[in-house]
Length: 123
Picture 1 (tube, one colour):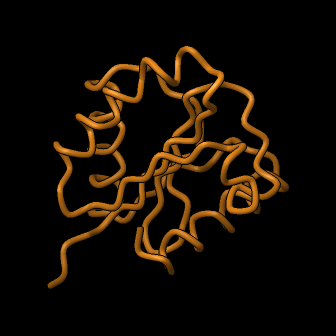
Picture 2: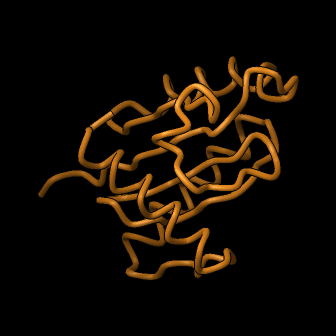
């Protein structure tokens, strides 16, 4: 049986002080979650990849599995909070329960496009 691989993307902006502070924490998260695909995405540098996603609060995490969005939203810039979020998503997948997203239909579709692109690219 293949292990579950999550695609975890941090959507940020270079001008955002909170994102700059979170970059080290995200690097720690990347080291703590080997086997998963973590990616730091600057929404301005990679605007084409981000597409129609409207990031209102930074940092924003996208957590997906096999192109399916499990979570998309802002997180507190703390390692423990991000780890608990990821553990909850893995537990939900293992038990066959998913938390419904609280995004508009338009934003759900935009995040789904990004999740599918990350799954296809493998990074």
